[in-house]
Image (tube, rainbow, N blue to C red; front, top):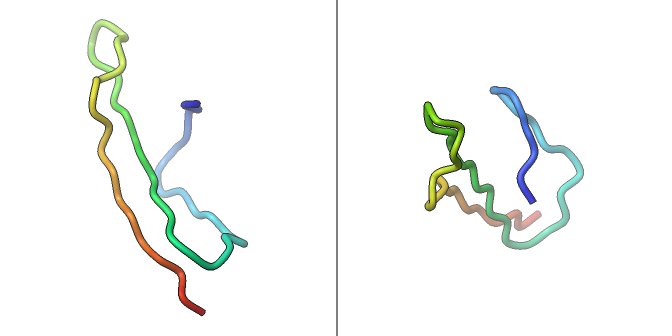
Length: 45
């Protein structure tokens, strides 16, 4: 599920393990792009 957010965005209290953040962009016509930008990371301690 997509939800509006602003930049910079901070996430606290994430559990250990793998995480992925995906960010879709809205085009000029208001359509959401098919492939969102994605960043993955792992919290180990």
